[in-house]
Length: 472
Image (cartoon, rainbow, N blue to C red):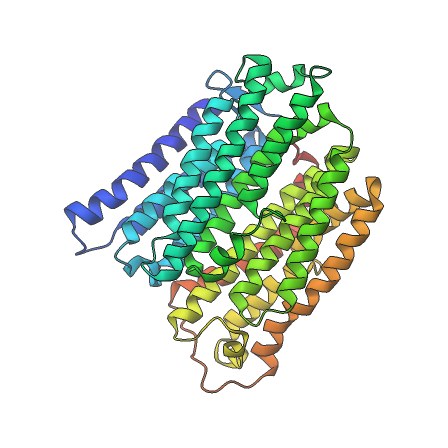
């Protein structure tokens, strides 16, 4: 059943991705824009299928499909649902803005295919398909960043592509070493490597960690992220945070943990150090930003550091709690960042800038949007009962069990982050602005932001029963 359902999902998203530009560019020729509605239909159908599978296969471990090319279980379905919901939010938000760009059919086509590629990354079971899915998601991301025809998008796309190519080279080196040791491309072959040529395993792991570090912005591989997340149009960055990042982190869990468990040694400490550098750098630099978008860019770096707290714990002894925290935090991170970047796109469309000073008075002129953004920011701080509280609780609890020093530093960093997350709230509600624009609830962005905030509240109140099953 899983294989048939996954085949149907692949068909739906592929058709949606190919039909969108064909209709708008060649048949309708811009007279009527149908791409977003085709995309929403495709994503909605895929989401319903995934939800049905998640209920039917609740709590079950991954099973091989397509001859072992993919491994799909409840964990993979959960992350795929997060990606699908995130993509639906991005598409909904685009109906008042991106929809009218000359490149909008390409945006919707890339979004559908990017979601499909992210499904593959999360469910990977073979290195050959892994390379194909990685290439698909990477190329889509580079093109997506450059869709807004301005200098910032062009520079961001160029830098992102350059760093992405380097990451892909490192990834290929890591996979080539594993293939050279085993002569097999199946992911399951990793379990047979215990006790064989550990030096080569370590070298492979170094290449893979570096490649993944570049992709998600782990310090010191983060150089591209502030310029891309901080300058490119926020509506495009919402796709990267809500779809691509979730897919890549899900992939990290599938690939690195079996390898690192075999190599053992000091890897939990190394991952812990990367976590410390990443969250500390991200939070400190975010603290001094006066540009809201760049602040959120550095905040994204910090959150990858929090995820690596769970990774370090999972590599030590607290595997279950650490991985559960990663799964929950990906949901919290995706919905929160989508809401925030859509908000930034909205105020840009309203004639404001993304500087903190331009948020003054929005609490009065945009009360519903401002309250929703306040909830999202409190979620990123980790205020109960929001989803961000529970995800940090599981991540830090896992750290306390096996690496107390890392958990303590993470808690301190989380406290530091309050200093900048509270700033937008202060500007919106406690500062007077000079004629700030009013919100229009008929616009697609306010409704999307409100839904994102509701998802964070609902997730915090309802996701507890599934936490024990968030293990690949």
